[in-house]
Length: 138
Figure 1 (tube, rainbow, N blue to C red):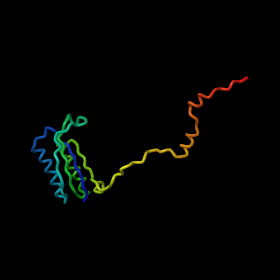
Figure 2: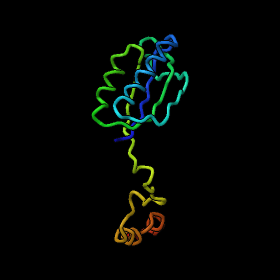
Figure 3: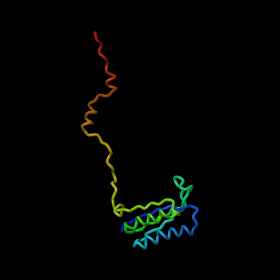
Figure 4: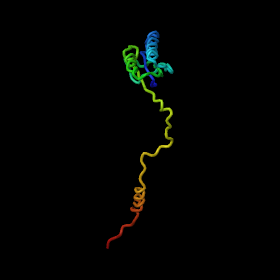
């Protein structure tokens, strides 16, 4: 079984009965396919980045769950075919991601080689070249 997050936005003017029916349909599909729901979060009404179906705000919900990978395609179809959903995203959670340690100090993207540093030291300064007096020709 893999871990997934489902984030979905519903139509804002949806009656509460239809909204609850949508939630219940998703939850029952997950549990019927030997899945386990870990958490359900109501994010509330959020402003959309751009209008979708003349809606500028929508209620968002997130469900964290474990399920077999073969059942994800059917879950996508259930959400996609329901008129109550505006947008959704199903993200697979990598279990090893939280265990991995991030490097504390990063190397610089570019560091000149020592040979180039020596070459720069051998080049005379512009100020010393400009200040040298010119020899007069006789």
